[in-house]
Length: 209
Image (cartoon, rainbow, N blue to C red; front, side, top):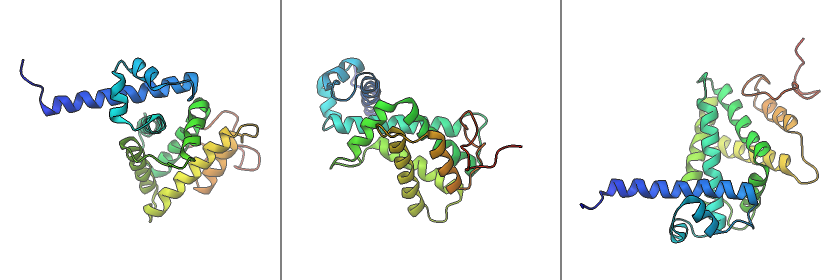
């Protein structure tokens, strides 16, 4: 049997890494961070336990990469769904709705992720985080920013703050209210993206007559 080519080996490594990332998202969403072990993740992914340590220095870094991958995939799907749009305002609205939607749909996972980011290690500079950043930067550019290097970090900060507000234990902010505030800041019509049922909160957008 001839040895595998470098490209085949690279593809196998990519698939193994992605299985680990997907297994991490699934298990932490089901059980929580503390109840999920690296061995559990390897078993769910169908990989050897040693591969986890080969790709990631620890569980916290693995979780951040896994959630950044989920955010990237969710954002990409929202931006590219039919009917596709090249309108920058529509794309920004879809981006806001995608990230807020993750806070609504995956509260345990996103709360754990945000708590990890606030620890000393901060952001993990990994391929998944970089792909997410590139997609958000492109969204800001298509929206019409004249200074993407300034406006992208601001959008990221506003989205992170909104996610924390949705997930704040004991005092969560209504998602529709946060969406309205973000849409007003960026001059987006309420009907762009995927507006929630019930219309805009009172006092934010004119009600349809």
